Image 1 (tube, helix red, strand yellow):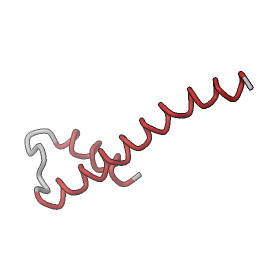
Image 2 (cartoon, helix red, strand yellow):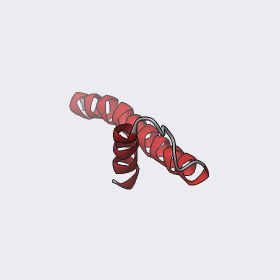
Image 3 (cartoon, helix red, strand yellow):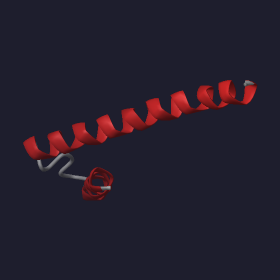
Length: 55
């Protein structure tokens, strides 16, 4: 039983981080649709954001 408790303690934060990441990517995609040029003077950052939002 102690192993189950330990694993659930680990799983909950991982699930939270996963959900947070999914929400962040959804937010980035919304921003891209509204504003395609997020950072016009830094195209490498835009590329990284686009890669993150596609995966």
